[in-house]
Image (tube, rainbow, N blue to C red):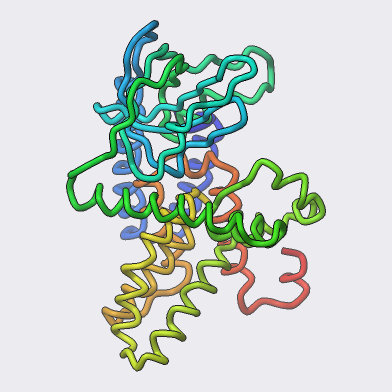
Length: 340
């Protein structure tokens, strides 16, 4: 479900041999317990996703709970991601008739429930050797079905809900507004701000920033979490100027980071930076001394609990690999640092 079994088994075997070679019984026991817990969790998640996959249905009416920043309205089509009332995540595609444009009702400005008519379908498997398996990729992200939309029947603004849902709706609404407002910036600056701080890629992103994407600068900043460090440093500077105590500064930043995670598009590559920052702030508030490697390990475990397929995504792999490499070369020779 979450990658190649034999590759995973091989890496787990190497890791286990390394643990045994340490000859430390307490570490070995903790490693076995942690492996069992995560193994059971992954199996549970795999079975849940299989059970939640819907059978294919034609000419049916579906209600989709959609956030405003998850709806992309194009000249002749609409792409969206939403949830069914039962909780399953789905993607939706609507194509307007030839010569027509999507109706204005598609451009929602707040969390809404869309009532649509169409076909509920499963993702088609890859048909060729080494072909990108889009269905497997979507299932790793928790998206189990797609809806081929024939008609938009009604749009109802979302109301009520628990505190968590209201907070989530507010973050997505703010992100949608920020994306619209940043489009008023100069073209290149808008692409930088949207791509780095909001996790949004405009249709012309790779065309206008070809040189930057060749160098991988935007991706390097995103993977390294540099923009998270920069934002927390700016917040700390402003709050200290307002004469807030260090504890108050840490609490405010700690409570703000989950909101920024949603505002930045909740990308897997961003999860590590957010979790490490939150763990470091929490340790500081509790006056605990925690090493960078411990923070790295704890953030990885929490991230896997939240997003089991994290290490099957290139962004997650590069994010944790880069962070580990920086920790590993700390204090070593300049030559080794340059090699890494």
